[in-house]
Length: 147
Image (cartoon, rainbow, N blue to C red):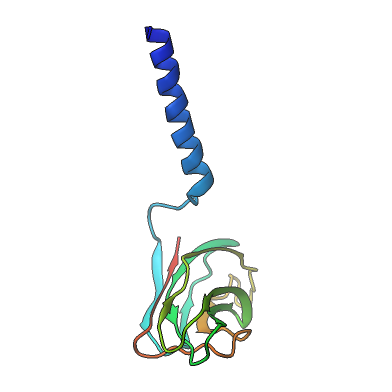
């Protein structure tokens, strides 16, 4: 094999690896700005923070369970009384805590001005309103991070 063929194969493999990484790996920031909620269940968990800007990227992790087999369970992210995201998973069995999939959530947050600057925002994690079989308790753990 000559040097050109070897170089071409090497570049092809490198390009393929880069392409697969780009397609199958989410673009994730490398440094968190602030851990907003770091709490044991049960939900709800609420935190008020200064306005983070029009666009915010959140990362949510947590778990939940159900007494009912074959049901969706989940957690809602509520910002200023508006649901912006539901992290969910299908639970086949009962009484087993299920990890919610990793959730990267980009949210547009309107600025509400009442005292010359954007008001603080209130963020709440709660059992998913669309999935009434969701249960969270002291054995569940939740983290919401602002990037």
